[in-house]
Each structure stands twice: as structure tokens, then as C-alpha cells.
Length: 150
Length: 179
Image 1 (cartoon, rainbow over the protein chains, first blue to last red):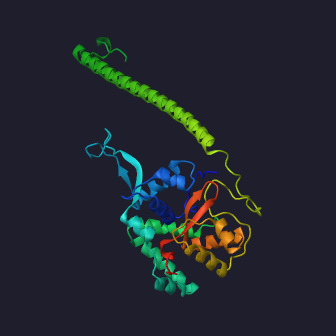
Image 2: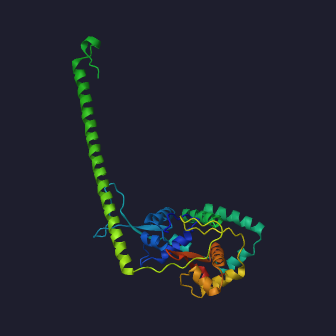
Image 3: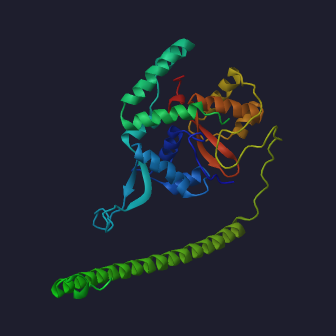
């Protein structure tokens, strides 16, 4: 049965960004309906809703509509026309594809539980200091990882 | 507006005329605004009705196309039966991670087996049933192992098939020997 919503507990932002990347054309654009079909979502807007939030945080961008002359189409009130295609920004791509080196992972694995508390404090402080996109996605990654929906 | 006459407070006739003109002009301006808003409202309602008709027509076309597809594709084979579930059935509204009343943890050995099976085909979308058949493990064990690997960000959901459910792929860093 097609799914009617897609919460952060259902799928992390990183997984979602990678699904977008899976279906990107040569210019990096993916139609939101393609993502909805890939994830068996009931409607396009379920995917669009997540994409809109990710755009707000700077992880994706939306394609503007252009006329035959290549000019951006604009409504009378000044608002831009957009298509239904989206692509990763540089920050979004780094967040989707970035990973720890093997030695970095091994260092973290060797930490004891008490040390992990200090690491957690450091991570939250860093999340507050980093740029808006990374900080927001770090907070959501925490929420995804700690969700009890299993 | 109560008429102000010389008998009441002696206001000069010229000032009264001016006030009456201002009142009339204000009423005319308001009437213009009301008329414009009514025209906008009529356009909006009419436009929405047109869109609603278009949506209804689109639904009809979709039904006809689906019927044609069903006729051309022929009857679909019955889906493979899933093993009987224990406990409460999972909710179907979201993708979720599944619900399992069992509290046991899958062994690291099984998790490693599942990861190795996926690494044998690093670019593929992996169906839990196929992994279970290949390794001779139960679907419950496979799901637990995949949940564990997802928690560790070694695998991800790549797609959700309408019949087969969640299909998994390796995370970019798990394709090599990063972990």
C-alpha cells in the first residue's frame, strides 16, 4: 500500500538525499514524482514536502522555469515559477556522500561510554557553530538515530 | 448621516456641501473596491471550478489508462506468501523501520554475513527475501541485521517496491573496506 507520509523516523535525510542522487539526470536534476515512485509514496507532495524542508536548510535546490529565450519566468507579483525538479547542492552532496575514514571510525569505536558523553557534548556544540544547513541536518540525524520506531 | 442644518448649530452651507462631497466620494471609492473584490471572487470561484473539472477529467483518464494497462499486462501472479507475523501487525502509513515485539539482538556474525552478501553485489538493490534465501536465514534475522546495518549507516533504503517492500543498498563508504 503506498505510503502517505515520510517522517525523519522513516528515512534519514542522508538516505533521502541519496535516493534523489540515484535518479538524477546528467545535470543532477530529479523529478519529485520519480522519488515518490521509487519510495512507493502515495502522492508527489509527500516527496515534495521533504524536499521543501531540505531546500530551506540548503541541502537541495529547485529548478527555475525558463521561457524559450532562457529568461526566468516570473509571476506578476514577482514570484518565480519553479519546475518539479530538484538537485543536491554542494553541501547536500557532501552530506550525502561524506564518510569517516577507517581510522576515524576505529578511534570512535575505542571510546568508552563516559568518553562518549564528552564527545556528545562536543558534537552538539559543533552543531551549534557550523553553518545552518549542516547544523540542522546534524540535529535531524540525531533525531533519526535515536527514534524508537522499530 | 444626520443632516446638519443652520437651525441646529449654524454650520455654513459651503462646509456642509464639502463634507457631503467627501462622504459621497468615499462611498463611491468603497463601492468600486467592493465591485473589484466581487469580480476577483467570481474569477477565483470560476477558476477553481474549472480546475476541479480538469482534476475529475484527469482521474477518469487515469482510470482508463490503468484498465488498458491491466488488459495488456494480463493477470499478475499471486505475491509470495510472507511468513506468519508474531505480535501486532506493523502500521502501513509510513515506511518506518518495522515493528517487532521480539527483544533479542541479532548476532554480529549474522550482521557480517548480510553485509558480505550485499558487498558481493555492491551496485545492486537488495531484496531481504533474496538475502534470506541466499544465506539460509529467517526473514526476521535478516530484517534485524538490516536495521542494525542501517543504524550504523552501512546500508540504506534505496527504494520501496510496491510488492517486495524495502530494497536496500550499501552506503557509499560501505562499498569498500571502510569499516
